[in-house]
Each structure stands twice: as structure tokens, then as C-alpha cells.
Length: 203
Ligand SMILES: [Zn+2]
Image (tube, rainbow, N blue to C red; front, side, top):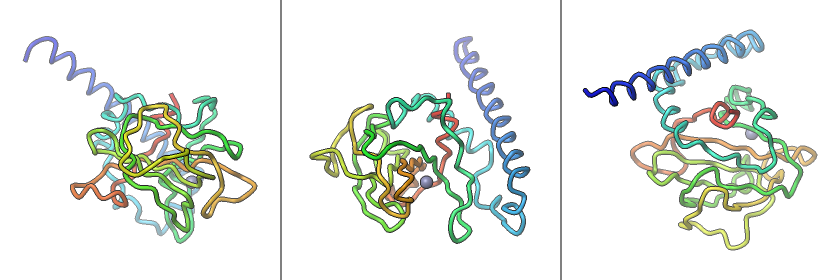
């Protein structure tokens, strides 16, 4: 191993350790804030281990994802990943509040894999990253960008649609529901392990 590689490895390790601390801190906060959610909830079995999560995230970190809503400051974001949702499910996403009609833009280069309307998500977009390792999910949209189509290549910052409250979002609280999933081997757009977008977008 030459010096350059060794330095790279060390930097990666430092980044993983740092993330583990962050995840630990978030978990601790979560337990303090909502002890009822932790009781009778064996969610630990369904969550990836901190090391595995750090591995995924460090790859995503290197992408330096763009903010999906222009004008939103990183410091304004609030971590809503662990929030409880209906039927004992975890939110597994980031909600970014914004006025209806605010432009939603691609966080990275990629392909529009699926335009889908669901009961919960309303008008949604599934974008795959160029390596088809991750999917980016944009939900509750008011409408799509004109001409947006499945299979379309998009570039970072490209207009995808507009903030709304379709699906189960409250009509008086339009927001973007943004989620990231690590795709499995099938590359099915509706599958994958949820990854918290908050630490990736908040800094
Ligand atoms: Zn949401």
C-alpha cells in the first residue's frame, strides 16, 4: 500500500467514525424525545447496522447532493427520518416545508425511472442515480415539470416538478417528502433500504 492509498483509507475511517458518532447521537436524541416509540417496537432488527449505514452514506456523501428545493438553507432542515407514521411505520424520509408551486430540482444527475401516483405519496418521482445504486424519491408534488417522462436523463439541478400536497399530505402544509433508498439487486424502483437524507443535505 503506498502512502497515498494509506492516507485515503485513513480519511475514510475517520469519516466512518464521525458518522457513527452522529448516528449514535441521533439515536440517543430519538430515545429521549420519544420513549414510547422505542417501547414494544423491535425496529432495531429492521435497521441496518451503523457500520453498514455509514458505508452507504459515505458513498452518498461523496456525491454532495444538491438541495432539492432552491432557496432552502441547509440549517433550516429538520430531521424527520425517525418520526412515527401511520400503522407503526417509520417515516424514513425528510419533509421539507415550502409554499405550493415551489420548484423541485434533481439532487443529482440520474434517470427518471418511474412517475407514480400513490395514495400516500400522491404525485411522485423515482430517480435512479447514474450507477443505479440509489433511488431518490420526490413525493406530494403538485405537478411534474412539463414534458417530464420515464427513462429521461436528468442533470443535477434540473427542474422535476413543483411542491404540493397530493397524497396524504395536509392541504394546508404543502411540502416535499424526499427519500433515498439503496436499491437491491433487482433494481426495482419500489424496493430498497431507506437512508436518512438529513445528514447528507443538512451540511
Ligand atoms: Zn414525509
